[in-house]
Image 1 (spheres, protein in one colour):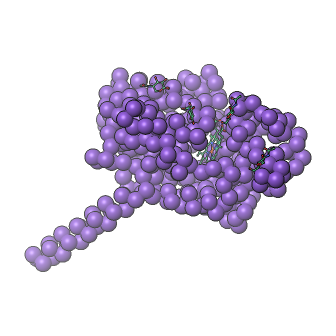
Image 2: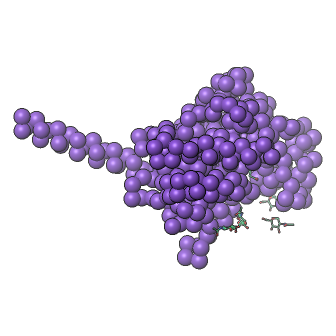
Image 3: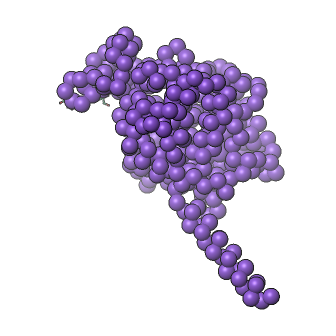
Length: 339
Ligand code: HEM
Ligand SMILES: *[C@@H]1O[C@H](CO)[C@@H](O)[C@H](O)[C@H]1NC(C)=O
Ligand SMILES: *[C@@H]1O[C@H](CO)[C@@H](O)[C@H](O)[C@H]1NC(C)=O
Ligand SMILES: *[C@@H]1O[C@H](CO)[C@@H](O)[C@H](O)[C@H]1NC(C)=O
Ligand SMILES: *[C@@H]1O[C@H](CO)[C@@H](O)[C@H](O)[C@H]1NC(C)=O
């Protein structure tokens, strides 16, 4: 009996040690977050976030893209810990927000409004990292046509907020729009995300806009020899992209990711990429890999519902990257400042 108990103890210790080890790596772990984490501690939490997003969405549907992108940028730098929201301080130095790849990050005001409402309802309970994950889900669901209806996926919650935000880490971890497939696969892989996740999450570029600087090199000087990116449809480049971004483009000029359809979340992105009209080299790079290219072609022909299901699965996996629990984090009072 005693031996059995001792065995059990050793086994349990081993299991706990293995769990602790795997939680320490910045990969997708699913055992720390739960759907409905705030059911007891802040019953209205998810409703408050959704109502806040809906308030802004009903005024301006372009709010979805920045909210979705914020969650992605948060998760890829130090895990989904709200670090993208932190302001720089004299002590911290430049924050993620201040890094070059932050170009046009936006939507902070929606997160701040949701946080203010949550602090009134249940102070100190709901993390900024969770608000980002919920707001991205709600905004995307609305852009998919479900303004009053169902969410496209359930968001496991219980993330804590981090205390560090570094511009240099943002530069190192966020993929470049000029990246080739191998680099993208490596960067997603380092977060525990696979080729399917990469191909499906890239479908986020069904919505939103880009500044010329993020792709103009493809039009005029791809390899530094005054050439164009050979993976880009030439007629499309001339008629649409060069017209929008002339050689001496204005830094403020933006182009819709999907011309004429940049606020509806759907499978348009995959048809663009399949016809060599993806806006970024990194979008077009999906065709460099057999598995990713197959996903692009399947999604280009699939129903919206089929895409949404897979997008939800990959968003949950992305939302699990490097999440903080226990003493490793806090619940910020103000999303821009550590407590
Ligand atoms: C695969 C690697 C990725 C690269 C290289 C990339 C790069 C970019 C770039 C350069 C922009 C335009 C920034 C600008 O010039 O204004 C952009 C916009 C955007 N990205 Fe990505 N991205 C990637 C993956 C993702 C993922 C995984 C998501 C979300 C799940 C996402 C969501 C968005 C959205 C929604 C926008 C539009 C933002 C707006 O209109 O304000 N991206 N991305
Ligand atoms: C964070 O920085 C932004 C932009 O500089 C500023 O508008 C905002 O007031 C700052 N937030 C706090 C809490 O200091
Ligand atoms: C992004 O970083 C640049 C500097 O690289 C800075 O001038 C700009 O204000 C930042 N944007 C945001 C939204 O913080
Ligand atoms: C093209 O790129 C090369 C190498 O980066 C650079 O030297 C050259 O000035 C660029 N040309 C133009 C027109 O921008
Ligand atoms: C456009 O951006 C570039 C590089 O970020 C900068 O050097 C240049 O001064 C900007 N031009 C204008 C008109 O703001």
